[in-house]
Structures are given as structure tokens and as C-alpha cells.
Image (cartoon, rainbow, N blue to C red; front, side, top):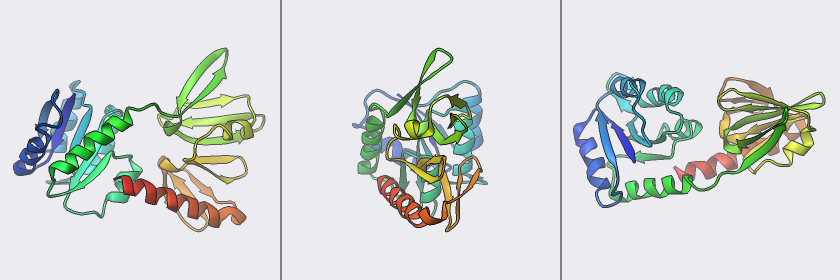
Length: 234
């Protein structure tokens, strides 16, 4: 396992490294004192399974660093380390594995590796057929499912769009509990909703949707319950 630690405080880097002793036997750690150093290493071809990233880096925001990193290395599991809980919601929106408040203890790092192991468990999939080709999509990477005439359009997290000649209701019935129907012909993955108001919501790629008026209250309640459950995992 290749692990990166990005923190401008050398003492905190040592604490994380010390906490890993005896938990994970087969690993290699690279350390970086700035987000720019980390991103340069990724551009040079380095690949990491896990990143511990401080949010309050010198002259940098760790969350912005991670967003840029995800364009280069989308499969790296992210753990934020910080002195405050104020960024926990934003960490959830970019699907952090964990959010650790300093000082970091060994039990915190034990929980990181437990979650990493759980993340490796089988994921919910959606199997679709297009142009005589069978595609297996991971449901946690589907942003939205929309009805377009006789077709159903699925937008994936990497911006790939699949147009399937199957009714919307049929595809909608195959989705897991992380999806919510917000209006006629539109179902969103709650993992990718970054803003919810009384009348509309927005997905991580900046697309806004009006909520169906008579469903709005139940939509908000279901979304807030989902967020609470996800936040409890951080």
C-alpha cells in the first residue's frame, strides 16, 4: 500500500506515521509539506492508495488541493486532518473516507484502515446494455438518472453520459437507497448533492434542479437524514 501524508507541520506528520506502526505492515509512506509538492508528484506518475491531508496548509486549502488531486488520481482514498470540524460537510461532499480532528490518536488511524477495508467490499452496480455492449456501472459513481423521451439518460461522475432505450421507471427501480427522485423524470444520487434549499438543489457539477413542490418537504427530510448518517461515518 502506498500512502501519502501532506502536512506543513512535521510534528503532525510524525504523529500519523507513529500511529500507523503495528496497524499496517505492508506500506510505503511519502511525505509532503505542501499541496503543490503532492500534486507535482502525482503529475510525475506517483500513485497513492491513501492520502492524509491537512486542511490548513500554509497558503493553501487542503480541500482545494484534494479536489485538484481527484482529477489526477480519482481512486485515492482521502482522510482530512484538521484542528476544526467546520469543514466536515464539505469533506463529505467530496467523499472523504474520514475526517480526523487533531491531535490524532492511534484509534483514529485504526478506524481509517477499517473503513479502507470496508470500502474494498463489493459495490452496488447497475448493468445496462447499449449497442450490443454490456456496461456495468458502479451506482456510487452515478450522479443522475433522467427521462428523455423513450430513453433514460445516466450521467456518470467522470461526465460520461449513457443513453439507454429503457423506461425511466425501470432503471429507477434498480437504484439503491442513496438515490432520491426530486421531480418527474429526475432522480439524483444524494452523494453528489452539495446544496439543498426549500425550493431547489444543486449537484456537485453545478447543475440546479427545482424540487417538485408537493414532494419538497419529504425530499429535504430524506436528504438531511442521509447527510446525517454519512457525517456520522466521518
